[in-house]
Length: 19
Figure (cartoon, rainbow, N blue to C red):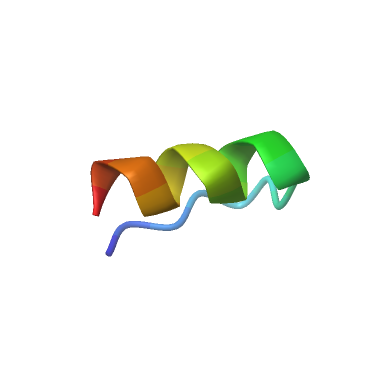
């Protein structure tokens, strides 16, 4: 799970979709 430095609702949603 590669989490970028920017933590936003959109990024979290994208990360969950990627996972």
